[in-house]
Length: 209
Image (tube, rainbow, N blue to C red):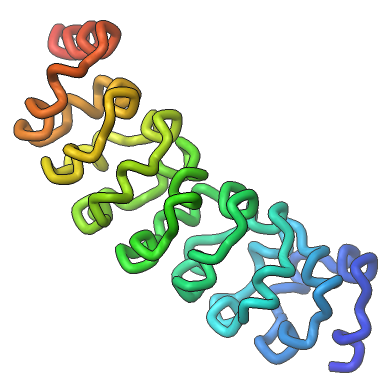
């Protein structure tokens, strides 16, 4: 344990990723903030779910944005919602898109607007479709149009009219034609007057196939 406490950032950076997999919560808690800041994505991806469940705010905030590119869905499942909600926007935007499949309604609904606004298309695509039925309607207002381009047909198939009412024109016109085609009829009709010429052409092309 003393050796772990004494590890410098340079020493820690030399550890192979598979060595990280053996870290227990007690050993992880003994790491200095300097060592935690040296985690890279590959090393971070090897941390066990048990370690992630025990992580505290100080430890979490010591990790660099680069480390979160290795965030795994099994790890995100165990992270406390308040830790995610308190993340720095730059760090949040660096989270591995594959990890987003582990977001639960509780965790996504706990996120502040500034973090929702950091979600990119690949991250948005990672959400499980069912979460769109349970997401707080107001959150949809915070998604940037650029992120909306990441919606998948399976996700838009779960969208309801209440959530749709929160979209503005820029967001609506960022939805891919194949996603518009998968929407419930009530949502499609609600959006229809704001479709762009490009979206209408895309829908017509889909119908002709």
